[in-house]
Length: 106
Image 1: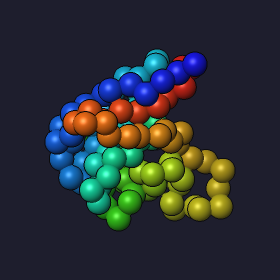
Image 2 (image 1 turned 90 degrees about the vertical axis):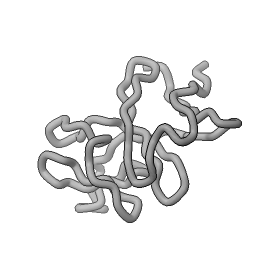
Image 3 (image 1 turned 180 degrees about the vertical axis):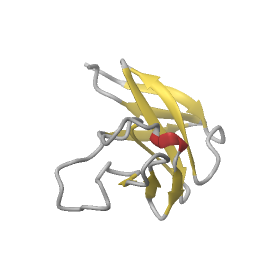
């Protein structure tokens, strides 16, 4: 059974930005936006660009390569909301000053 893993300290990720962390064999983008943390797969499902390097605004991250937009909270492809294409999303919590993610072993 997988558990929450500490990946950063509060304050390590500036407001409106993302950072990349390896967790349980996956590369995860963790964002701090609008005062809360969220986590999705780092690789854009289109061409594999790092989403943590993208522009974050209004709950969305814009892929730095081709400007596809994804929800930082649930990984949905915002440019085509009815599409089944999406990034995996992961539960995030803050315990004390530790930012923790729950990523199933995979």
